[in-house]
Length: 187
Image: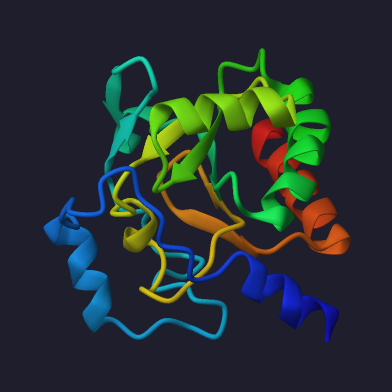
């Protein structure tokens, strides 16, 4: 019962810095794909879709440029209470442990918000890992169906394959994710 109310609190918010902005054609394709029970249109074992990562300062790189590294994508938004609950644990239990490991990349991806809102969010929540931008939701829609909510972590191995998908914040699943990242980085 509690989990259902939490899921609703981070689902369906379609705020955007530019409501007239159109969705990228690749992301629009997600509308025709059936999502699983957790809202994903990708699965463990799939190759991660490639997309352009936009940093707040304007730098852009492709996700595929991180091949050879273990990558954690964390979809989030300032209005999401569950995101705000989980992010300090990501900072403490993952980022602070691995931030100096050249084989690891952690990217927060802020959903449908302006660079200013994302920067304030990162400052307020006290995270130091990179919080990149998904201004129109097109990056999120490469992984999730159109009605899916945020608070998602996607772990990608060194070959670009998805090895874990999480939804919401659940302590046991989070601990499993931390162990998986640690194990992948030891390989």
